[in-house]
Image (cartoon, rainbow, N blue to C red; front, side, top):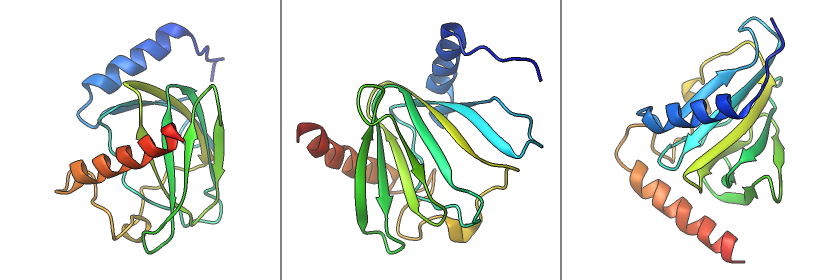
Length: 160
């Protein structure tokens, strides 16, 4: 693969695509799908919903870095109890390394957010048991309420 430049035009294009994407986010792979290390940029719009999930494969630790905007990361126990809320931003806690089997979710707290994600390949869609049974899945009833509750919880974190 050629060297890829991460320039403002690419970031602006990703943000525009995320804003027009029905899922409210847009990925840009920096890797070929058969590479053992997957690296990608993910633009998040404020309305995106990333359902709480965990990667159960021992090789699927996930590193997340905030490049633009404020992103809330919630770490959950397997039964849905909040373990920790972390505010990720370029001006504060820049990133986190999430170990395998740790349930987590992200929420965009600003209109435009951009993260860098890195984890082991190859890409394997999440299995049913890797989604939290206590949270709505993307597109299900309850997503708006879940997002509202997370926003309220992070408002407390931002005020602290």
